Image (cartoon, rainbow, N blue to C red):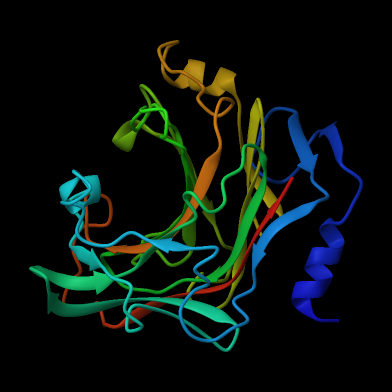
Length: 283
């Protein structure tokens, strides 16, 4: 059976919320598992060329025009919409980082967003991705809260479904950011593959998000559950749960350098590509 079809079929279930005691995923407390049934948005990247403009927009530049030089993280890339950096080929979205002099930057890459095109509060958000490798590479699949009311980050909230450092090919991170728990003080947990690497094959990264729970998954394996009580505990009561009052939009990007991964080194080979097989959203 076709992998995409069989996986989609497996999620067409009656909406159900149940509480189970999870074994073997390094979680100590009873977890709330959410099964969602209704596919409301997807991109299978079936048409070669540029990404579908009805689904994705581009953020261009080095962050200066947006008022956050280096995209707020001292990143080194300039994001473009050129086919050299972003294209759809043979059913896969390719986001490619290149080492080249461009508009004052030493690297180029791409950053795609659904802001203003598709935004949703709650549901399952997932992407099937194959990741690159190399020091200084920082690809991610993440969500940001709508800021149309004038709120700014971190008040709008951020959910990092998957962040990955290219020099650590066996692990990814799932993270949330909000008031009093952002940047280096974010609430995060790593997931480590057993006898495998994220740069040698595709894996599914997802969250299931309800008013009071965000579950993080890799290949349908739950490895982290976060609730308002976790924010309160991690911030000594000073943090605010900001994941119940606005819609969020999706972002796919690959940064180069920055505060978290550090710069590329002599062993980092370019170009490097992040491959995305599909992105799907359920409610």
